[in-house]
Length: 61
Image (tube, rainbow, N blue to C red; front, side):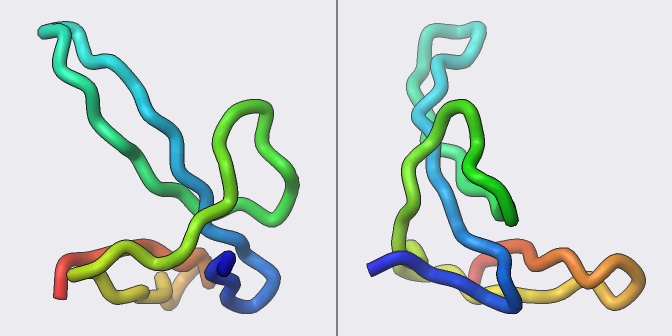
């Protein structure tokens, strides 16, 4: 199930940090990004919306 809010879809991407550690990043996009896969809302997070821009973001519950 893909999470969507007001036309913004949630995507995730696995990245490798400089120290060699792997981390999953989550981001919202209206278009299909070059890399990343659509995903569901991760457990322990809620969605907030920036009042000025209307862009949704994730924050820990």
